[in-house]
Image (cartoon, rainbow, N blue to C red):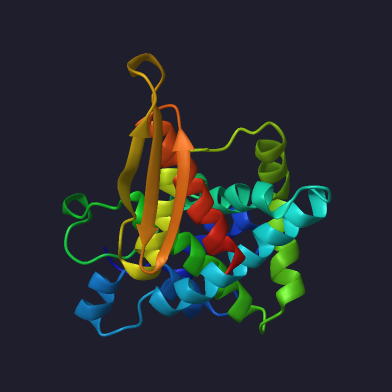
Length: 232
């Protein structure tokens, strides 16, 4: 796909409620490394790194401000979901970022998956922050105008993913390129009322939980390890 003109980005800027002063920053945020390598330009990777940190801050601030009585253990799975690949890619789809993404070769032959869309969404916010002259308050206010109501509404209705295994895996793969490992420590009790003890581990981190099924114990151990990582 070829680079777009400034006018081509107007529908996206209208949805954001923000007009870029430096269109090169916006283009970089939408440039996949395949296109960057082919054309000798910068990809979105650095802006993604920046945007990831910004979105984490914005989401945590929203949750802490709105759920003042919630404990850390309650906030951790919420935060993990609202910064997850799945959620951010859904926001990217709302903005139709796929239509602006610069990739090498024919677009039809390049699979733009949820991981790439999530990365581009993060890069977009890194680009906005840089374009504002690193104005954190403005960037945060813009993000909240667009997404605070959605985050709060989903959190209050608990309309967010509670699959702790999936959330944990997304985090560990992004951080270390590794998946958590689950190991049955013990099985006890009569056949009709078994109790499973499962250990979840990744790197040097381990958490153990007990459940009435292997699946339940895995979910609980993933939840505990997720909370442990969030504390760090």
